[in-house]
Image (cartoon, rainbow, N blue to C red; front, side):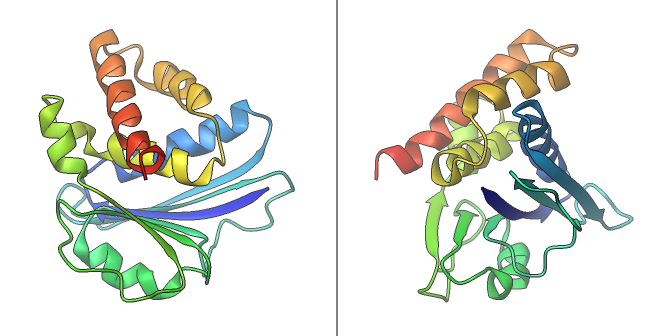
Length: 180
């Protein structure tokens, strides 16, 4: 099992948190993982992305020139990373902020209205968890229950309500794939 992922968007969209949760869940499941963040000096509002590798074998390097999966939370991220996605890979895009179609026809595409779904749940800040839910259902590199555990351990100290809201957002995102 191997999934190499690039998650990208604006700073403040929770891009790095998504990556950390996937990597931590992989660790909890006994898989080999790597997580490497990258962000501009502006942080919130600037660009941010991270690379995550989840594998059943040792990870030699966290550098991923051709990811199997791209989660693009905004248009600049899709423009930058779409050409790099491996043929036969998966692109998950936040159609709330990306109105264009993916130019390639050799990848599987999941469009998720992450911002709208998050607003329906009452908090725009969980748009990242909606996209994460879509990823979990599409790629199955880690189990949703393990992500929930990672979420509880990461955010649980802050607020039970926040953890529950994030879980609901993940489940809403998951339905994008399961209802296709």
